[in-house]
Image (tube, rainbow, N blue to C red; front, side, top):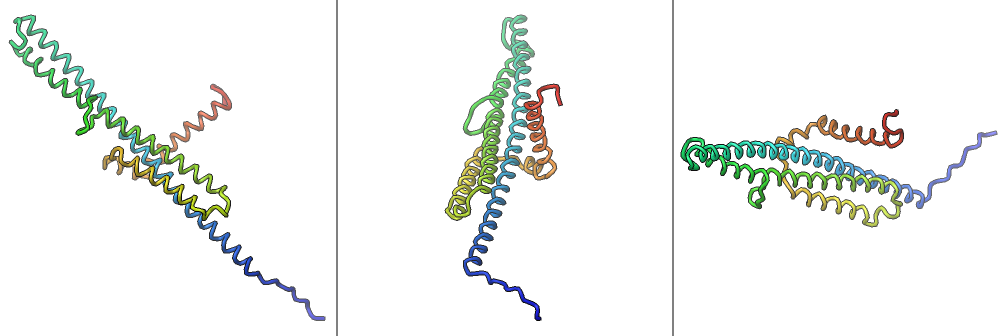
Length: 222
């Protein structure tokens, strides 16, 4: 007796078409997931850079305020000493120094906390960088949400234009936030190091993990 050969049923055209469509859908999901993942990372990095800049300008603003307070106090003391001794404001070196110190104090206060559209002060720069950091965080969260929704999106909606609309929304948001305040070159260089970004992000993740542990176990418990 001859061996019976197993019959193979050739795939139909519709089956080939379905397999091809499924493959294209998976590729489309991967491509958009990569786009949103890239945007999520870049947004987190931009948020870190802006918060770093905000801290820098805030520290400088406080330093200038301290110097201004000292200069102002010395100026008032010098004028008071001159008046007490000679009955005149600038009759001696202490009085002259006091008169000169007060305008300097005013200038320092202006650069620290003043308001101008021509030259943003230290405090204004810190505020805008903080706003920019918050904006980048929103974009990072939005990108993350779209990545999660992408996994659940039915295949028949992948080519409906919804993915393009999502991505356009994220891109337009980044364009708006990018206009708020430029990042210094040295900060860009600092955050080009993967280790710097990872350490900062890991610190936030660890803080969140500890907070969740406290919610579950309570303080003082493991």
